[in-house]
Image (cartoon, rainbow, N blue to C red; front, side, top):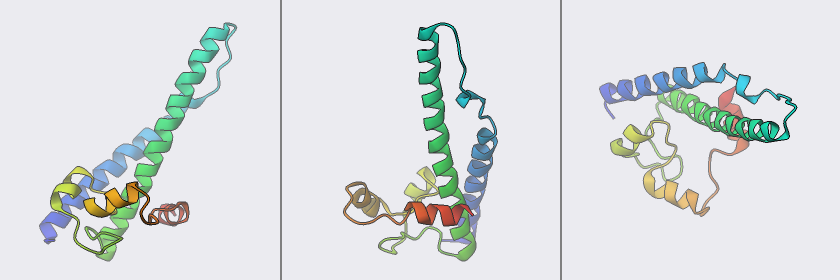
Length: 127
């Protein structure tokens, strides 16, 4: 990967990190609200559950983006963490924080090998 391509991906990752970080500050949607009407409480609980799921998904992506930026710094960005082959530019353009090439990602989705982004690894990369 050329330095120009690497700089392009780094810029994409930094923009995504900033976007996700800004969104994390708004946590008012997960506040528990009480109302007199039981139907309203059910609706608010559903909205809160959706907000929590979105926050969880965004937090996971933010960790992956930070880990990708760390790989840019250490020179391992763009290399599949499983087979150690280059990740295609097309895949990196779609998912700049990708850990695996498309073949290994499909295998990971089928649980054919233990994924590298286990909870412990994600927590270490978040620190």
